[in-house]
Length: 103
Image (cartoon, rainbow, N blue to C red; front, side):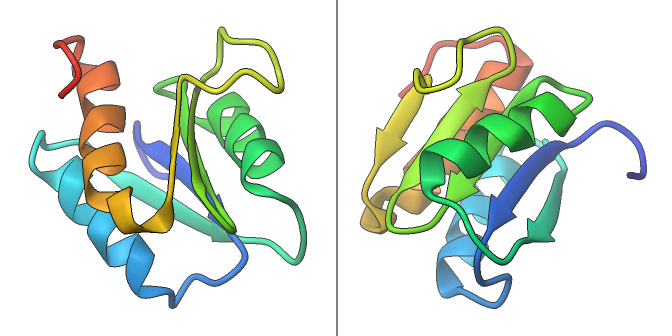
């Protein structure tokens, strides 16, 4: 991994949902690293992503979007939502990193 970044794990790295998440993160100037995996639900992917992230924040994308902080236990994401709210969830993930209130 290159430098500090939020890690996103997903089943399809070409999904348009990722563009929205990336845009939300970029609004706060937080970089993103995308890892495509072959299986897993959003909860599992998000938790693994948070554990890998040097910023302690990870995002899992499958049938929904889950945002985790590495200090939260597995199965207890900080935020979850439908794919249609991907940009807002990406923005809030960035706000967790920056340390400002969520929208």
